Image 1 (tube, rainbow, N blue to C red):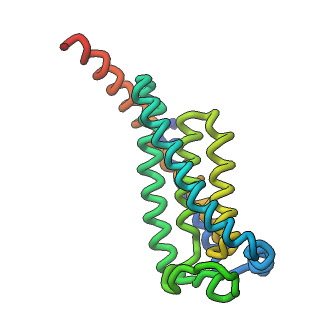
Image 2: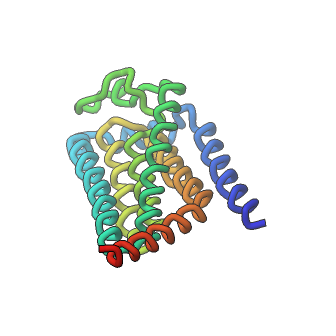
Image 3: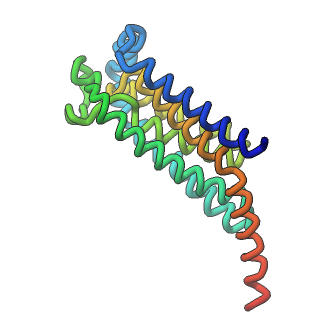
Length: 213
């Protein structure tokens, strides 16, 4: 029963992700209206700056926690962070395929925002930055729960900054957040026993190493 639940839960999560992606393939009126409200000067310039800064901050926090848990020999969070990074990479790869398949141009090609705009074949839906930001946030929260209060606000800021910069509609961000968060969560839950087993083996291995020295 436990193994069945371990598979069924993630599959249901991924089906929910697929449903959200399928439901927002056209630009909803609320998304276009909200974009026109947010992507204006001086917010365009601020959004482009914040987008880079927040993503760098999230990546540095993630790498810092990997290093910290390794040094502290806190192996379960360390292994979960590794799996979270891998799952985020997979979610990013899936998102690249989705962007190419849907081929939705960015709003800055339809609206004059006054800021720099990616090439027209660099599509909009869903947002790559947001998938990565929320995937990393989910990886951090799953491994080290108290980091939820830091990671997800940073991920939200990363997503909002992409709209402010004029590079995405708000619904691009919503779908990116769902794919990043729930896609990574599903993967982490499906392989949670593998993570625990690897953490135990790593602990045993590192405990034996000093005895051999």
